[in-house]
Image 1 (cartoon, one colour):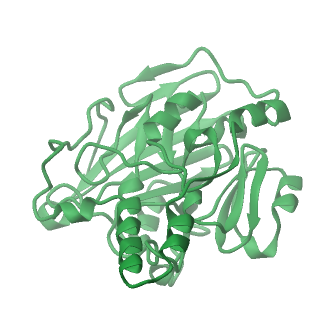
Image 2 (cartoon, helix red, strand yellow; image 1 turned 90 degrees about the vertical axis):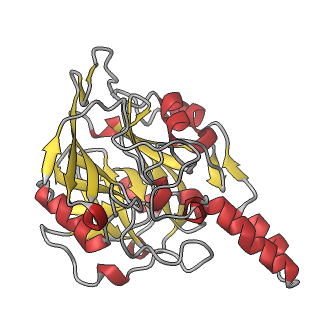
Length: 336
């Protein structure tokens, strides 16, 4: 395995916009919305419920507008210092409240080639790890390029989140405010005191989590590392059973959060679906990478073409070996 520092402003593996990586068809690069649109078209041809499918999977539905203004009015981040003394390097960032360093690792060659990016992040205040929504609105099917979301939020480092807007289930708490309380699966909770815990959504409520000091929750999963071990059976887990996201298995581009200690995290992105550059990983292997990075727990986020890591607004990773990002509904980021 090779591990080295890099210039984050230059993607490690970039192909021209109109070229497909060797061994892959362009069909594999269709966006989630395009795939859903095709499915809806098929329903229409068979007289199926195309209108329902359009409303559910494509039509934007805004429940809360101008989230930033509501957060500011609520005072949830009162007393949180976002420093003005931050300094970027080619591989990270340092300020009076935050240190982060990104390493790129690569193994194998040809069909076995694998590349990933790990950001080791330590903050003095857990509330410096934040979330931001596409278009600064909360709802369903609202998407935006992660770099645009990160720029508006002033993110130092950002990764894609759980694509909450694709579904209407899960507990969604972001930056101390509860937006959805529909327990469905194994979630991840960041607490304002620096703790991080994997939990069963169906055993609690958003109100109870807020009372316990929840700062952010993510609803995707599964946990790929628990108490320093990769759980059995995670290769069979499904997050959703609806169109377009039935299975999260196989070797895929991945995004994950690993926990080393209080206020000490690893944000991990594994590139994939690019022959000769990076094949992607399955969930057990993802947990193994986090374990090797010193984590004791780890949680899988939305992956595939959505996986991305950004430093100062620029792509660090290259999820599909094409040098471009894909629109999603949310990011998790370091504020400063």
